[in-house]
Amino acid sequence: MYSNLWIEERYKDFYAMRYKVENVLYSKKTEFQTVDVVETKGHGKMLLNDGLVMVTERDEIAYHDMIAHVPLFVHPNPKNVLVIGGGDGGTAREVLRHSSVEKCTMVEIDGAVCEACMEFIPQTAEVLKGHPKLDLIIGDGVKFVQEFQATNEKFDVIIIDSTDPIGPAAPLFGPEFYTNVNKCLADNGIVVSQGESPWFEAEIQKSMLGVLNDIFKNTFIYNFSNLTYPGGLWSFTFATKGDTHPINDFRKEAVAASGLEFSYYNEGLHQAAFYLPTFMKKNLEGLIQNP
Ligand code: SAM
Image (cartoon, rainbow, N blue to C red; front, top):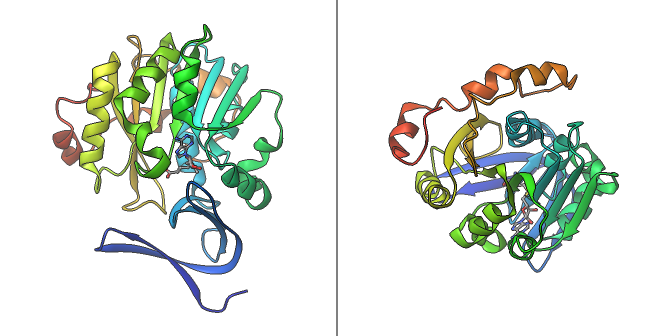
């Protein structure tokens, strides 16, 4: 137990978030990054990759509800789902709650992230310890889609639950990767990706949407808010191979019919999330479809 240990995540040289740490549970330097799990006073257990907060027990539900349930309640019948990244397990956990899902393939580059979360953050990672519908692969998502696109199998929904565009995740934001993702998608397939901060990373958002626009039929972006990402407001991109629309094709009645309980997601929020603040609409003008 540490009496006065604080952990600080700095955003560039002008902004920082600090958290009171009660215990350091796990710390490892891998070939890809440093992986730490700490017990905090106010946010429960927290996963940090390269000193950046990835997941906390307190607010992970916001990110995982919105990255999984938005595409899965739009796609007409999602059976085969691919998750790239997502080593904490929270996205796979939510995907596997959908009874239509027959198979979820998850490709995480760093086994240490899964190992640390299985031991110290079962709230998100319990599912990684074994689930009949989960195929967990420790490997590079870039290589996986390169090889997979040559097979005949297709995914209905692909979810890119990655870190920021640095280190091993940098290629996950590029045209070559998304060209292969598009080839791995069924004709009415949807791809949703971790889309950075509207307040702080408008340039990354513009470049991501530029890449998606060149490859996919329709491109949208939607928001959620949490406690531990810089600025609290964060986005996901939503791109489709065919004409699917995130609101017009939203299977609203399926949410209640699923019998699933949610802590963050609901029918109203699903739709509201695609209505953007004016500064964001201005930043991304011409790069996204209207909701
Ligand atoms: N929600 C978090 C965020 O927004 O920052 C991301 C959560 S998840 C922990 C991100 C995972 O992506 C990390 O565990 C990282 O190892 C993994 N990752 C990064 N690059 C990858 C790649 N090329 N292929 C597969 N997984 C990758």
